[in-house]
Image (cartoon, rainbow, N blue to C red):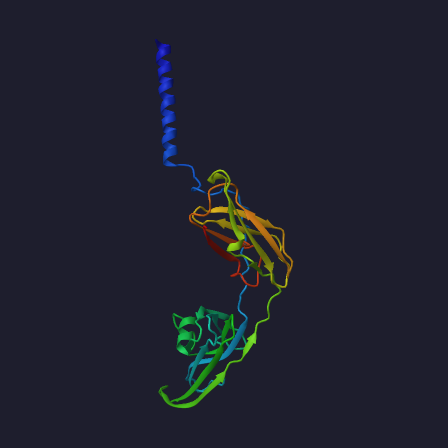
Length: 317
């Protein structure tokens, strides 16, 4: 009788343990891949900050002087009120990306080099003209208040395409109470452009990539379908590119991912790649989209980091 009782206790204990384990699995289910997802191990992303390379080609450095100098004994700048405004025009039909930066010589003054203060990056649409006042520049650089009664230095613009840039300078006299008396001088200057010296870097782009390169072959049933795509990667930069990964996503809804390792690509050279999916679901449902991302782990510092991604879409015949 005792042996039977012990056996029943052990059995009940085991049953409780099994049910507890099942309950824990239901609360914490193992991660699962979404339908159609091809689980392919990816190389671990390299640690450390990646170098960001600017795509700007042209630079404009406009002298900047804005504020009021009220000290009679100041020999750095004559007593008066000074205003600067910058006008930017995009003569092209398409948008131009540009950045704004303020570099001060006063403050700090005393032959100390001032640091560049970034004021953001914008896009000027084709044919548009923008006017930036000195007050707006001051508020953008020092939202909590200007460090001095006047600011002196350079307002620097860098752009991806050539722009028309000019500056308006106004000087006014002030009275003993530091109030503006009258306009003393006004001058408009054209700010000449400087072409930024391009760095010796690779630049990987996708070429010869269109819907004619996308095809799918199915045999007896849908589980045998294989999607194939062909594209060309070219290094248009002036420096050889080391090894990098290419991420190809077939049908983002199904997220069938194929990672392709490239040992490197010399400057000025190109290479054709044909990528196939393992047998699986048909990409066409009813259309098929395939997206290619070069240097998916951002291993390569490039001249232009914004031209590494392209997608194509093809309707099922």
